[in-house]
Length: 337
Image (cartoon, rainbow, N blue to C red):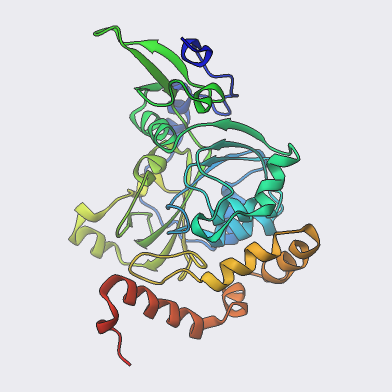
């Protein structure tokens, strides 16, 4: 039997406390009052994200990412953040470029899928500027699920016999009913979750169209939740179809109205990703000498996300991306000449 098969626990560092009772102490003090939580992104980041916080980001890959909040994290100079790199692509690239992170739970980071690898993100690992603990996508998802359930871990049958297990912080246990070997994956309670949605009311009741990945559990596991939304809708619309409320108001601390908030990523059924601008990012972050002026132009010298959108082509470009998304979703016959 190999050494990896025999190991009883991973050697990775656990960055967050999995104790549900400690988390519950915080949640007990969190207000359930249905009050107006609308604020701009600058206020949300200033109020709810602190240096050293551990954050989780919603969406999947370059789909439905909360870009506006990530830019503002860099503008405000937030530092020493931890990150759950569950399905992290451009979101990880932004935080890596700005030097905002010092630790990460890794499932998927660095790559922007078929577009290539972020060299700024790779430099963090190559130069040992970030602490790393490894997981699979499923293991990280189940860590959120455990936290949302209020239990310290969930049993799983993943990662055995792999280096991913070796460099994780999971532990081997045995089933009390069957005696089978299982892996205990610890609950993950982020300090802050940042999630971009299709619609939300002023209180934080939010709706998502299409793929949701782990956002249901992330919103319930996190101590503080910032929602950015394409559309700000009336509470009556929420009440007319309560079954569509994916994230309830009592989980949410801030609601920011940010149309095109996932740009340059994709927003399912709304607009396609800006592949030209994502490639511009990848070219710029190839070397610090090109990355610095790029960040100055697009993030540090813009006052907010709207100015960034204008620099990237404004409404004309965004309407092109809307048409492109319609083309991908419904086919070319649906697009007028």
